[in-house]
Length: 178
Image (cartoon, rainbow, N blue to C red):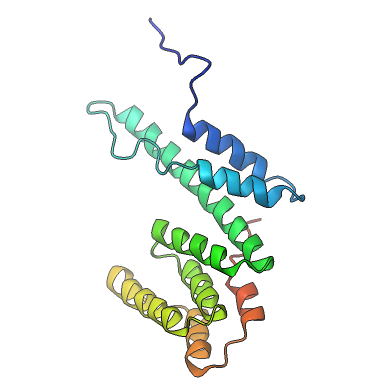
């Protein structure tokens, strides 16, 4: 049959992102943060968002799997970069990225804890507690669950004024997968 091929001067954002993300996830050298930042900027959102091919279930299954793989790759790079931003003291940039992670996965409690800790470390106690309340309501409504003890403890520390940013920021960072 006939084949369709893109010209050599055509770039595909998903391919570019995937290549950059793979390079950024290697051993962390001096350029790792810059590489992650470039990879994150290249992410154009879900692959072919809103597109499906009627009557082509195999294509739609492939597309769903590719979307998921790219989204997981984006999350891994974003979480790693957020941790780096926290460690270097760029808390405002870390908070922007943590907020973006929350937009992509509104039920991931670790993202709430990270964003709460960042708000609190920036002196934004009310925003941190509002975020906890949002987490509590959403988990209850969507899953019939209460927040984890770790999340409740962080909210209590923020509420009571006992919040210590150093250990809380470290504990808020997700644990890397093995």
